Amino acid sequence: MSSSNPPLNFTSADAPPCAPHAELSCSQCGLAALCLPLAMADDEIEQLEHIVQRSRPLRKGAHLYRERDAFTAIYVVRAGTFKGYRITDSGEEQIAGFYYPGEILGFDGISTNKYTSSAKALESASICEIQFDALSRLSATIPTLQQRVFQMIGQELARDQQLIMQLGKNTADQRVAALLFSISTRNARRGFSATRFILPMTRAEIGNYLGLAMESVSRVLSHLQARDIIAVEGKDIVVQDVDKLRNAANGCFE
Amino acid sequence: MSSSNPPLNFTSADAPPCAPHAELSCSQCGLAALCLPLAMADDEIEQLEHIVQRSRPLRKGAHLYRERDAFTAIYVVRAGTFKGYRITDSGEEQIAGFYYPGEILGFDGISTNKYTSSAKALESASICEIQFDALSRLSATIPTLQQRVFQMIGQELARDQQLIMQLGKNTADQRVAALLFSISTRNARRGFSATRFILPMTRAEIGNYLGLAMESVSRVLSHLQARDIIAVEGKDIVVQDVDKLRNAANGCFE
DNA sequence: CGTTCCATTGAGATGTGTCAATTCAAGTGG
DNA sequence: CCACTTGAATTGACACATCTCAATGGAACG
Image (cartoon, rainbow over all chains, first blue to last red; front, side, top):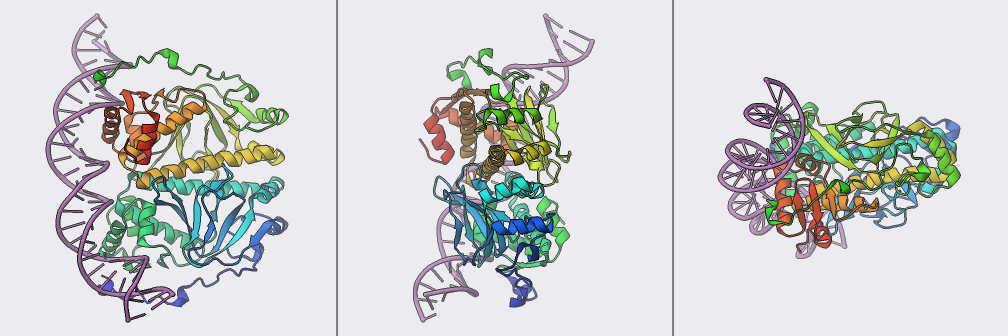
């Protein structure tokens, strides 16, 4: 399929150039600007660090938590990616989100004290674990932190509502384009390339997330490639025309 | 269409039997068990009351807030119903939620300090307004309240994710059945009839919310009626078989 | 070096959208 | 009080986007 396109030549050099070390403190962490510490004073960050547990890496396929587990902690992705999903009454998986470094997992457990979804690593990953009751207590004494916690939950809300808009109105083309655009943006936010990245999830997972059949995802990707908007080679994606991609996501042609 | 069914005879007596008065304090409010005061001590509730503003009623069609308005407050529905919606890039409306008494609107503004959606009354309604910064400050001193605020946001998250599941996987029949079941449950929670209620929204709004054409909603309602699951007469709904309705929502027949 | 998973592509089936006609109810103004 | 208008709802016929089924090839992995 991609034989008519120039080779993409992804190499191992495309791996995160400055992946955070497991021992790194919050104040030194490259993700601090996306994470809870944003806008916090140094001494406040130090207090936060006391309740942050840096866990060992998770391997691909490992669960961070499962549906109905007791809700005790939230997790910040440090490296790698996760999918959040539930099992429907009819036994199928439904993916509700993908999580990139700097994004927070686990808020869905707040209201019932049990996680309402499962979180699974799509590739080797590492995370920071924060006990939620400790975070609650600390945020009661640090207004900036409390505000930030609210903000992070609010972001999760915003993401969900964005997805709802997608699923409600948009065509297959628009949904896939929007996901690619979102991933591109999220990569850029962390200082990675917005135009060249590797999808951590399968076509089936993309389809599941977007409410499409795996085959439809594949077809849309081929179609976007035929329109010279992206170049696809398996999981390697090159965005050749960001503007066109944005337009495709919004339903405009060219 | 409904001529073959027994008349429903809805009367004005079906109006809320104990609608809260605008002057009612939180401790006396019939919705307290659903609202922020849940699990709070009497003296704590009294503090909460100081930051709750009880607004005058809104008439049908009035906006509580609009997309991009400055986020200052959250709102608890006391009576009536609201829809939350956004305008897509292509200029269409996309409804992201319906809000019944005891439910909270406005959390979507937290992350950006601007509401990301608009809220409009579907019928005459009244609300309580709570300044969010005051709520933040107070919740820092009352752990139960802080926990409760988190819970309420978490509920919003859970609702959104539920909708995502719907939109991603389910058929038109399942979506409409699930919405009816949800409304039935939410009515019951407030002490109203779970089997007989009046829809506050139009078919077009239901369709918009569920990602369906108005005509499809209409057809599904007729279909559910033909299967003796519900009786429809315009906006008046009688649930004749709750179990069948639940099954229809989950994709099981009979 | 099988085995398994993933991705692609084609052909046909189908659920839902679109378009259109009709009815009904609620206002509105002469 | 009666046209007249307007919006909501229902129903049918047809179109079309996407799903399902099926076959194939390649990559990853034990």
